[in-house]
Length: 156
DNA sequence: GCCAACGTTGGC
DNA sequence: GCCAACGTTGGC
Image (cartoon, rainbow, N blue to C red; front, side, top):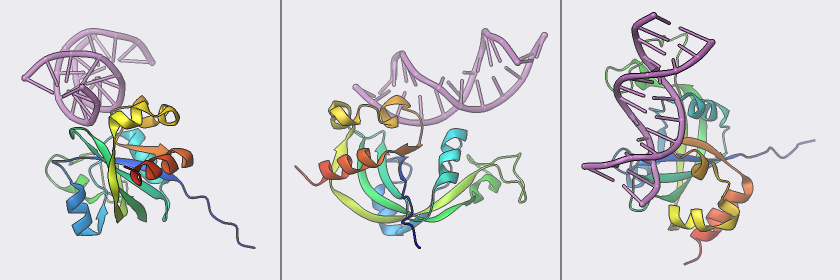
């Protein structure tokens, strides 16, 4: 007998200047590379195909959740760790990569962005990781938080 | 293994 | 642009 699999929800941040939602929409799919924080990495590695993802623009005015995405491939070696540049990781080898990247698929722009001040005000969103660990760029979101945010996005 | 110095993220 | 939070580095 088939058991319906548990679908987890996540939030990933991207600086508007760094990788914009417009670019993500054009790309359709993208490897979520460049994460260089171990807790964020742990979350990336926990992502399963089909998991729901909130795409959040940080450093915006204001910052906001702007789109929905879905995990389309589970995390594998992040190729940017081998490239000279900001993301280079000297400890990494092909057999023992240090950093990992899942593939995310663009789903849709939210009907309207759900802005950080609104999230802060919302009684049921007060315990979001987004508000507790402001610098964490990949974080879990509860099913209830996910539902509230998508519902807010559908109302003016 | 502690911790000070330093660098980065991200809200404002 | 400032600065608080916090992760990382490196001396000891």
